[in-house]
Image 1 (spheres, rainbow, N blue to C red):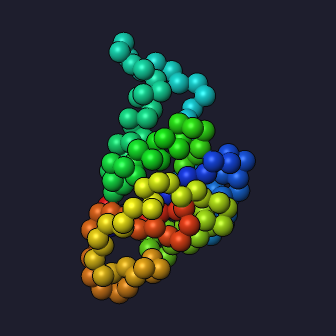
Image 2 (tube, helix red, strand yellow):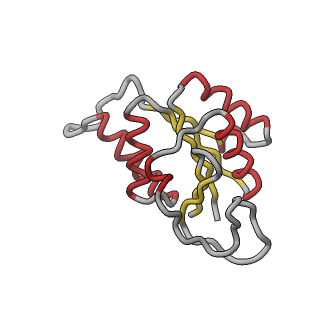
Length: 152
């Protein structure tokens, strides 16, 4: 089951260092992405509204990863207000490590992060450490600070 750590950063200046630190922890470049609202949003069709197209695509991607509608919208709102999302996809241990790196660099906690956690099967402890047995439902697990782990 794919797992992704996601962190929202209001300070664009730290994002490069976050990505470098995650890659230094052993993540391949292809599994680490930073997404902010593009400065040049080109038209993709006759009825296209570039900013809306970008936000809808981001919302869909977050939902596909297991974010609730409220969480996905909170992340889209964060990007809309100038923030940058960092995604790191990997194994259980890797995403926990990536979330720790994101939190050390100041990943912000969205309003949704304060909501009750979705029910996850007993495979994951509150700390996010993987256990040897069980399965996980699609969902979100907050990892200490602002970074969240998504399972899908």
